[in-house]
Amino acid sequence: MKTLANGQWVNNPEISVESFAKSYIDRHVSEELQKSSETTIFRRVEDKFILPKALRKSFTELLSQNLKTDYPDASTKYNFMKSTYFDSANFDMLKHHASKAASRFKIRTREYAPNGKLNKSDFMYMEVKAKSGNVTDKFRIKVPKEDVETFKKGAPITPTVKLIKANPSIGIQELVKRITDINQSMELFHLRPSCETSYNRRAYTDGALNDTGLRITLDEDVNYRILDVMPSSVSSELNKAGEERSPLLSMVDNYNPKEHVIVEIKHQGAGYPDWLTKFLNDNKLQKTNLSKYCWSLTKHATRK
Image 1 (spheres, rainbow, N blue to C red):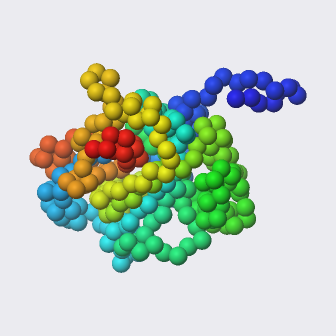
Image 2 (cartoon, rainbow, N blue to C red):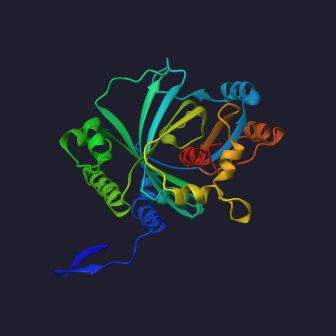
Image 3 (cartoon, rainbow, N blue to C red):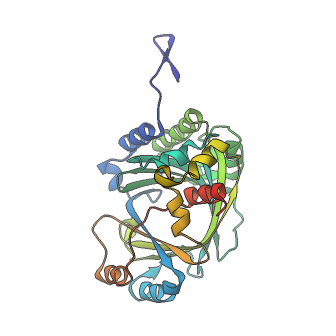
């Protein structure tokens, strides 16, 4: 990559996905942000478990006894979720996840449909999710739908008056910085829409404000649609067997939407309540590394 310095173009060291993710965390995650009341910034630990559907009823009953449902509207029983993920032509974001790097970064757009009915809106959510170690920092903004569509075609997001008014809890300076990072990552890694996932989500919370407490989600019936052509080199890499076997294959081996529910336990690192720990131990459920995006692409590549 070249940048202008002292009136001349100079070559910069190659920027990797991991180094970009690390610098993103360094720029945006601070003690001040951790204490922020802004509901658009989430910093938390996310643990994932694969729950057999045979245990779903007993687990949801347990959740109902100890937590309350977590939706903006009391009439909502579940949300239908649809996300579009961005990757390069060579699926560098997918490869980066397979490398198990300490720092990760991804961009997606997301739509919510309460009880399966998509509300008419002029906006969609755009999310940037950065991870360093076990801690996840997710930044979310509302973006006009027409801007999202042009963004998918390669145009940068611009902080228009309409976008700024749609995100009143975020300071303009912070909003511009975050949008600049989104645009820069799209240009650096040549990102474009690569995969769309959809699923039904049920959510529970302990009621703590600003996402500082315990939140548990159950995701079912995951479907996907591939939006870009996967190079044969990437497909071959994902299908490797033996010692060179792709670590992403275990996601496909261990998770089947017809047989399992994806459970995400989101917390601040203080541990689980006793009732939750007991259920997990009694049923021998262990934390797993599962990404719906990576699972979808690997499933597509292996045709399992």
